[in-house]
Length: 66
Image (cartoon, rainbow, N blue to C red):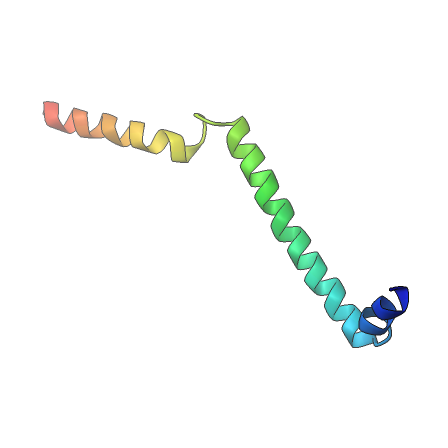
């Protein structure tokens, strides 16, 4: 098993570098999605995406009064 991994990934420098870049990219995407979902769950009701409909509804009701 270790021989197969060595021959597949570590034997050639170009393959090793490509593996490092691909792994880093996938880790970054996973970490970004995890942190974003945690942040949005923690700040639910305080984010612009949550407040925008309420604010726009307030402006529309003010325009209807005039």
